[in-house]
Image (cartoon, rainbow, N blue to C red; front, side):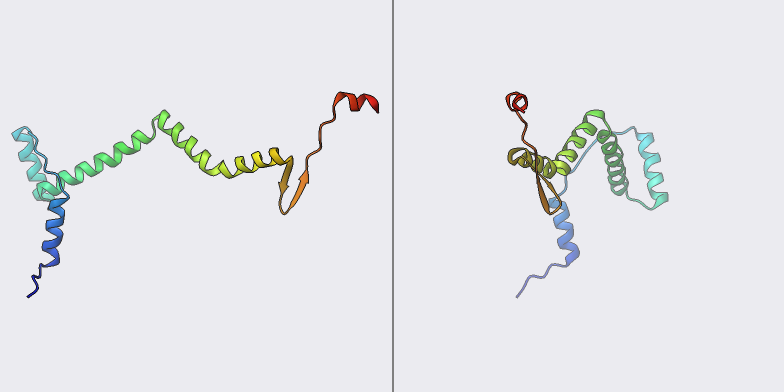
Length: 120
């Protein structure tokens, strides 16, 4: 005999295993107003707190990402990713003294020393 557990029960059990219980104190008057608002909007207290925490996280995550040091770090990372190939090609061109322009290769001119210039 197979022990069949409904999907809803499995999901509920899984949700419980992946959840953290939080306990905090609130002024009683605020809690009554909060519960009243939840009831009027059709939310449970848990749903309302979860939604408030999600919105708080989203709003403040954006603010954190706008701090100058974060913007600079993200910009640096983006430049590294986007231009790494170009920098790599430039290094190879310097080493080979060539520039790749499309499918053909152009050789860079060799610098002449002062002695060679004077002899001419």
